[in-house]
Image (cartoon, rainbow, N blue to C red; front, side, top):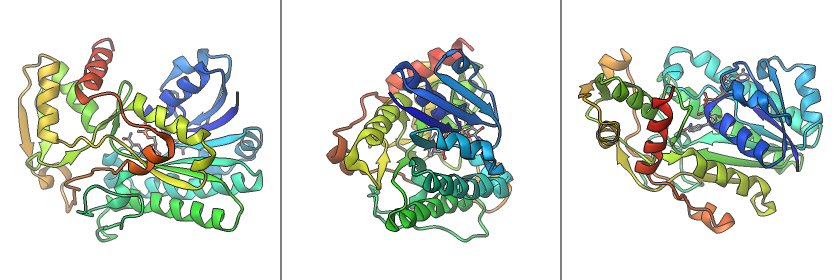
Length: 314
Ligand SMILES: NC(=O)c1ccc[n+]([C@@H]2O[C@H](COP(=O)([O-])OP(=O)(O)OC[C@H]3O[C@@H](n4cnc5c(N)ncnc54)[C@H](O)[C@@H]3O)[C@@H](O)[C@H]2O)c1
């Protein structure tokens, strides 16, 4: 059993992983600015600090010192905020991450970092391999601040490990969904469908994503975190099943027996200024399979049913 320091412990992915680690008897020290998953406080082996990772405090230094591994998930991960608040996205996703990495080096702790499929940007070479190119737009297009922040952290982790000062694992996540998700396409569609309101789709809804159920992602996290072979490696985590946003809307409407209609909105109407979307995002998971034997188990229909059932009870 281990002691983990988990940043973003109250977030969607963080709270699922925390619960999984706690149930296996590990000790988790969580930090988050919000207290959005209060049920975690019921575990005796969970300690929680409601504060920001950005203040570089002596407490964070102490918490990292007292843990064995740092699971660094805290970030601004909601696409709306890349456009509304890019400064905070960069402060948390890049600058605070650097501060956490410095402390990991100081105390010789391993770090597990959640990066993103946005790393690959607009690259049209499908599927994305971990060492594929990044194709990004101009720095005047705000949405790229998230991808660039995560990429800077990846570079920094690689650089520190190259100096022999750090051990890391990086995962690039492809549209993880499940109970407790907020403010992303899957959760928005389910909320609207359950109240028979219109489901709004950007552009023509032909963009595809590979939706991955959170339990599958967590099982990949545990395999990667525990495997010595995965030291200083980067892995895509996702399903390879492509679903268009329109298809997703139709499935959600069907599974929730909803009377909702689908309406299409141009990017301009939705975002009010120049916006660039990524048309297809498909991971290659060959590397992860080779290193850990992992593959996803939960189909989109099965995962959506679980999420709809959970949302009905809220
Ligand atoms: N869910 C996905 O599909 C997905 C895809 C790609 C990458 N990721 C990455 O996975 C991680 C978890 O994502 P998520 O979907 O759970 O997002 P989330 O927004 O639910 O969780 C992030 C958590 O970080 C916390 N946080 C933000 N700023 C903080 C600060 N200054 N100090 C302490 N905590 C702070 C938030 O309050 C939130 O609880 C993030 O690093 C995200 O970039 C997620």
